[in-house]
Length: 174
Image 1 (cartoon, one colour):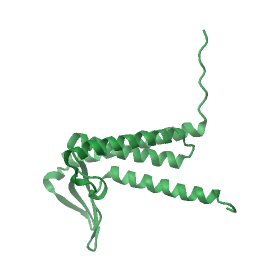
Image 2: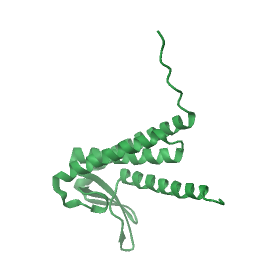
Image 3: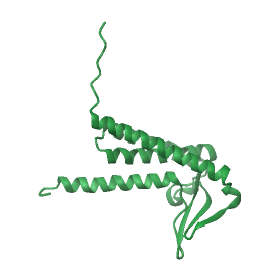
């Protein structure tokens, strides 16, 4: 009886998969713990808005839409549509993580996936995403967001930066 021998996974791929999974788990846990604390420990829904620093408040917002309130008029079906689309994107990003040999890319993908799943959990549990970080200054106000949103934005920024620097390094004469 012979055992099937699976090909060894190259070290860079294994490192990237581990990094992607670690950031996925870290972002998801930090996001969910922060939202639980905001709702049940700090009791922000009853407090509304609490100044923390000049230009930074905790402000309770139940976001039933997607980024910056877009597509907010979809009512209850939006919760399901946004969740299904998010999970499909997470699956595609998961395939990307298994194939990349670039640690920055794997980490960015893990952060995006963790943030997306964190917001899907909110939509399924509360019917809306829990947003609570409110930055503002001199009459300017950034839309209220959460740690999942920040992880998604940072992950996308890293992917864009990586894409731009990778193209430059492959350009003729570089």
